[in-house]
Every structure is written in structure tokens, then in C-alpha cells.
Length: 163
Image (cartoon, rainbow, N blue to C red; front, side):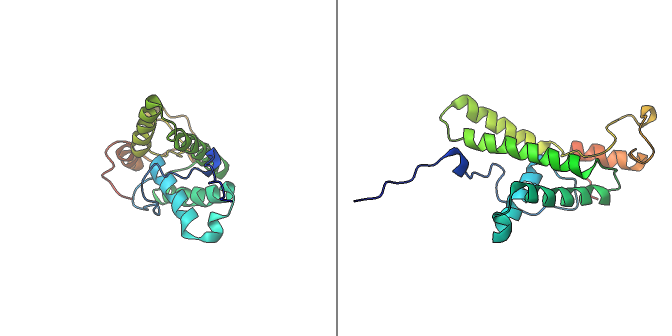
């Protein structure tokens, strides 16, 4: 008797929305797409890591992202906050990946917008969110230095400058 072919379930979906997995570039602040590429790169790079829970991979990505921001001399939020944002975004990506299997045209358009937004949006973990430093009321330890504001603005728009 022939065996029935296994059905794909939502949990078995493995579509990479952002192209080939790769390591984070340390010369620019990462976008949301960069974060997810690095997540999948870590998962694929080492078989032991592939079998690890999402939380462990999120922590590894969070450490790398935080190190890049610190290298850029920009104060960052806590590790717990960074890891929470990465995990939340991972969950959003999984739901978009699963929706791609559906035949709904509206969902496919939404996923294209999601991907474009991820490519252009900076994964911002800076402790201070004020664009106008003269009116910022943050502690001195959380403020972005004036010389770094130009770099931070560049990274949120044209992304031409490097760390």
C-alpha cells in the first residue's frame, strides 16, 4: 500500500521573505530586513543552532545588534527590550510567511508592502527618540550626542554614511 504524502501545515512553512540569509554588516545600523536575514543566517549556519529555541536565536541576534549600535556611540535601550522587539518582529514575519501560501491577492500585496517597509525601516533601539536635541529631556547617559545625530538621521533615510 502506498504511503500518503504528508501535508504542509502552517508550522512547517519556511519561506525567507528577505532573500538570502547573511551576517549583519557592522558598518551600518541594521534595518528590520537585516535583522531577519541575520536570524536565518544564524539558524542555518550551525545545525545545533537550527535546533535551538527561538528565544536563544533572538538573544544572539540582540547581542549583535546592540554591539553595532554601541559601536556607533549611540545609547541603546535594555537587552530585554531589544530581544522583545526582535521576537515580536519574528512573529510578524512568520504570519506574513504563512499568509503567502494563501491565494488571496490582497494578502500578497500586503506582504510586498511589509517587505518594502522592512528594507527601508531602521531597527531603532536608541534610548533617546527626540529629533530636536535642544528640547530633549532625557538623562545625559541616554542622549544621542550632537555629532551622532547626523549619522542617525542618515541611517533612517539615505543610508550613505558608515560607522
